Length: 261
Image (tube, rainbow, N blue to C red; front, side):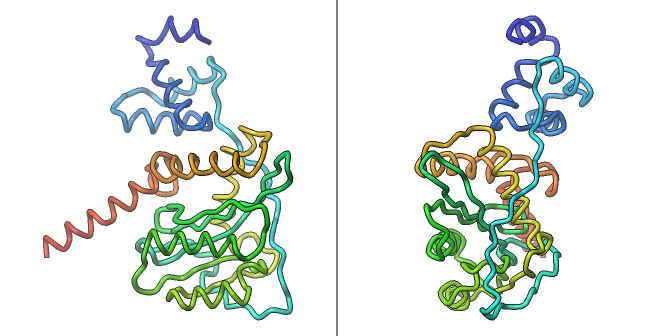
């Protein structure tokens, strides 16, 4: 592959394709590499990117089946499902979704929770823990509240895991002014967006860079992945731009409309 790059870098921009692929956790397929090159002002046909990536042995990752981690408590009362699988929001800080997953390490399982702002898919809170107790999802919530300081009505949606319907988590949502929403038991579609982010995380980071030594290794790698995901990863669901850029565009449009008025 090195020889191929040296022979064709000036003609096809092969070096740029390799750099774009390497800079993005080596997970992009031809479509996202093509979009990334266009954002950099490099005009190249998508079919050319596909052909060159095939010749260099570069390909995107494919997500597998996600394993369910929810442990519902049927005896505990739950909030209603206010989302009804409609994972759309008109602005940031209107709808957050949360879910957690697990990672196998040499020292046992660790658990990773994410809270995602639905509008542009920004990860606003996350935590890595050696146990799946309520504390670690609460820590992620506190991080999200500290970073975002939301004003107005924010709906917080999760599955019926016992951590989310605990006597500590639900009152904290109420205290912070968030409205709790919980999906049905055993139905992945009722929290599909959060599970999608979990799936991307496992596919793009955990499965590719393991085996994992311990919690600290997972935590450091997750920190880097979240930074990349929020600020540089292109998401097709929001127009092939990074989540943070999606929010910046929204606020810029709001300011422009206010000035025009």
